[in-house]
Length: 405
Length: 140
Image 1 (cartoon, chains in turn purple, brown):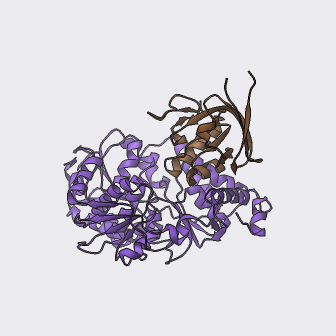
Image 2 (cartoon, each protein chain N blue to C red):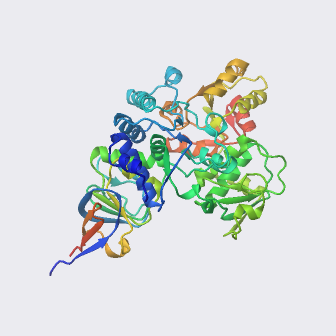
Image 3 (spheres, rainbow over the protein chains, first blue to last red):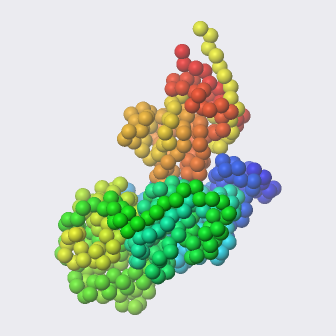
């Protein structure tokens, strides 16, 4: 790989140990993928996780004197201040969360603690070269906004934030952004939930290939939330950081443009029945629940308002906790505008800065939860809590009667 | 019987060197599914389930699993000193590379021969990533 004199100095340790480690990672990646050189990035997002390995890496760079030059926004860990008042965590878990905040603050990250940067706090324009980690964010910024990022890990995105560069390979190059297989969608699609199920279904088939969705009978254009759900699930059941929708996404105004002149490798047809069967396959069977968990990815302000509309003033059943995970911006807006207080009176709590996959939720483990996100269910299962997966209206009805149908 | 040592060129991904007994994984691996105390693979139905990677030369098809868990898996093994002495990768992927750099796990790829053909379980292997060479002495 060709390195400039300045890049060589970074790699040799002349700019400090932290910068050297970050550079080592970028060069190793570049070599592995035959990148000819590094290119500047204009934005970064780090999927901070609050796991030891990730926190160690950030500490290694920060203690080695490195600071971010392209300020990254960050994923959530969990809101220590509010959740430790409600739920038990061990001293080690609390300590790790506090250390994570400390090292990311020291390295100069913007502590947004939000997994939907492309919807608010870190929005690239078309064609920007960026380094984003977080499985729901990368498909959104690539596919919908037309920015260019690889499927970064939290550690490689942080290295890019420090150095301000990324190796030129993969989705930074035109030829790798073209569609590889065609998906003809016959199933009707409405709210974000439908798009999420479609994403999960197509992701299983995709592996790491780029799908081109052709949806001739789409009723109404999908909302940003729907597109976010589609990408989140595509990139969880599969490894799909980019997709096209013919006539809708910016690099796919026509079928021909989406494939860049090449022929689809395969074709998949998705019917209404396929999505119904997919729902049955990913969801647990109904039953009594102890938790409603929404906000994987983080709920927007519009989705919070939709929850209030569907609640119709009814109270959540005793013995059921109802949590909506959201961005600090949406939480602030809901506080000012009144939704937060009104929902709290009904037993629905909002929390910012928090992910579903964190130790603060362990007191619910062993019981059954309900969510509108297959991704949420997938990660929570690893921690010992099975989830029923239903559309939002089904989640709300389950909250009110204490049982998922 | 005389021992035959063969030498192969490779490409350095993470510098350093290591030697030890070979252990071959024809399946991709998620290091989060190893017991950090012993380096033993605990992933159900993985071909290496029950075998330890600690101190060995791991010949690996590729990596799998989300970046968060792979990085944490490497980290936990590193803390306990149960990482392989070096890793020879057949199909490199980004998360595996990033995870190895984080803890300085010696890693090479692009062996000039297919590593599955020329290295077997129990062979003595020396990996010199700095010189980009792998030496193999077949088990008797």
